[in-house]
Image 1 (tube, rainbow, N blue to C red):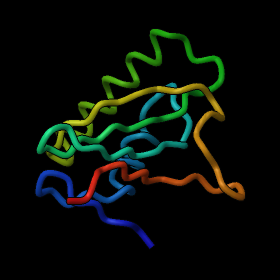
Image 2: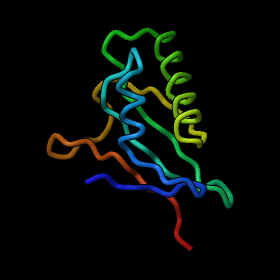
Image 3: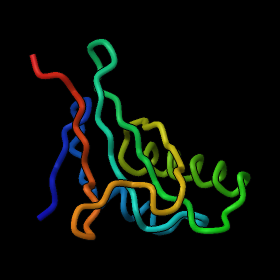
Image 4: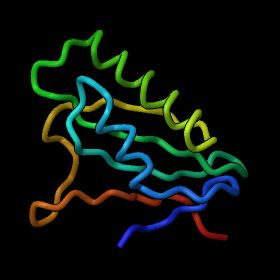
Amino acid sequence: SDDMVILRGVNLFPTQIEEIVLRTPGVAPHFQLRLTREGRMDALTVRAEARSGATPEQREAAARTIGRGIKDGIGVSADVEIVEPESLERSVGKLKRIVDLRQRP
């Protein structure tokens, strides 16, 4: 099943982010969504693993491409971090896609 997240009134599905990540050169198909609260606003950070051998320039371009794809395709702004290959937490081989760090009132 796909876990829907509501971010600033927009319904967001991890599969929407996955489509953007999969078509972006220089990144592996492994990503994680981190939800935080900045003041009264929710914030989204997408952490995607770089492909082995990706140059710093390719990583920067990938971050811009993913961020633009999310804004244009889904309608929300997101910070994008391109992290080292194999650095996102996995449990029994499966990547945990959503990390919700928002404080509940």
